[in-house]
Amino acid sequence: MSDENPLQPPWLNAPPVDPYPYEESHDLRVGPKLHPTLDGLLPYVGVWRGRGRGGYPTIEDFDFAQEIRISHDGRPFLHYESRAWILDEQSRPVRPGGREIGWWRPVLDGDGRATDELEALMSVPTGVMELHIGKRKGTQVEFVTDAVVRTATAKEVTAGHRLFGIVEGALLYAQDMAAVGHSLTPHLSARLIRVAG
Image (cartoon, rainbow, N blue to C red; front, side, top):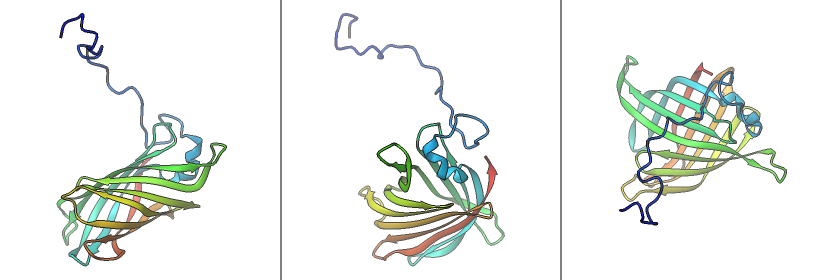
């Protein structure tokens, strides 16, 4: 394309840009100020690590370790990232486990204030994305799926239910899943301790 071509976008030959200039933080003492609509979710912001147990009618029960990072960048949503690894009987890592990334955000009223209702998007690398609607009650958050989208090669997941809570300073959760012909069935539960934030 020549310099005289009006269809040539200005960014085509532009120099590289600096690294992403905006900070994201899981620590409320540093970084951007937490958006006021997230005040009710403040106890969740941080890095959490712990152990859990998983299972489903189609697989054997298993023990796992997990790290969950919940952070913000000053806007009215939380970034959620989870990675887990399978443990053997001696609590040694065996292999990587589930990974998940998502966004939690409060539903706002007509005046722009946060209600106790929440929306969340959660995606896994195996081709499943879940849209959740939820409710916050104190330090407890409960989500149910409103929609599940799957790639053509993903496992058949049709519904989910998740319950999170901050109990005596720890993050506890239980997750039920409806998949591969089974109705909502317990799938994962864990207790994680705050390690940063």
